[in-house]
Every structure is written in structure tokens, then in C-alpha cells.
Length: 169
Image 1 (cartoon, rainbow, N blue to C red):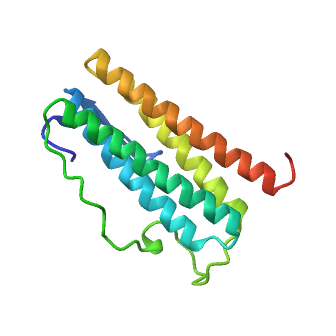
Image 2 (cartoon, one colour):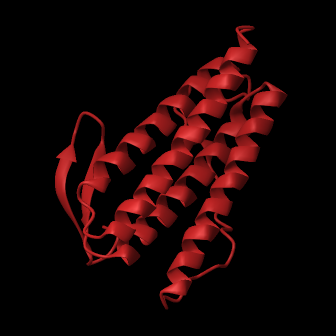
């Protein structure tokens, strides 16, 4: 549970996503910060596992972008008077927390990693869009729409990288 201002109203078992009703703009921002942190860790884990250096570099780049998005959301919290812990994340990243594979080596197909990232970004986009109808304020709806747009931009970058890798571009 994010905090007492959020409550789970629907569980989409087939997607594995808990849909939240957000009572405040602060709750929206806190949720976004959590999702950006998770995305950063996911992309760092992917970069550690993929063998293709260009794909790994893309994952590293997106991981850094997720931290930038997190910082923007934290700044929004600060603007409304909420104290934010801005200390860097020092928790060790374990790829097995994010990737299930029998292969211990880093030679994972770049295309498969990109397909996984595309699916992740699509799911995040749908999550934010679905949350818009549950948001209580115009400000919250706009914040969710902005987060959804960021996910679409990331999905597009992964699709372009996949197409380039497959020689379709």
C-alpha cells in the first residue's frame, strides 16, 4: 500500500496491476515516484543482462531518464510543501528480481529484452490512463496524463531500437 490516502478498488489479476483511487495530488505524485524508481531499477537490471552493447546503452539511458522523471515528481511534492527524501538509491540491484532466466550469463537476446521493455512500457501507459478516471482533481488527471505520455515516448524508443536491430528501419 502506498499510503493511507490511496486504497485499492480493483485488482486486475490478468494484468497483475492494482488500480488505485487517489484522493490527493500528493498521492498521485507519490505513486509516480514509486513507479519511476521501479522503472529505473528494472532498466538497470536489463542493462546488466543484455549482451548487445547498444541495447544495454539504451537501457542505461532510459534508467537515467526514469531518475529525471522521479526528480521532477519529487520537486512537485516539494512545491506543495511535502518533505522528500532525495538521497540516492544505494540498494543493490539483483537481476534475478526482474528477469527470470536459467542462463546465468549475460548473453540474452537483445530483441527479447526490447520486446519485454516494450510490453512493460505499454502496461505502464495503460495503468496511468486507467488511473485518470479514478483521479479526484484536474491537477491529478493532468499529472497522470503526463506520466502516460512519458511511457509512450519510452515505448516508441524501444520499438525504434527493436526495428533497427531487426534491420526494419
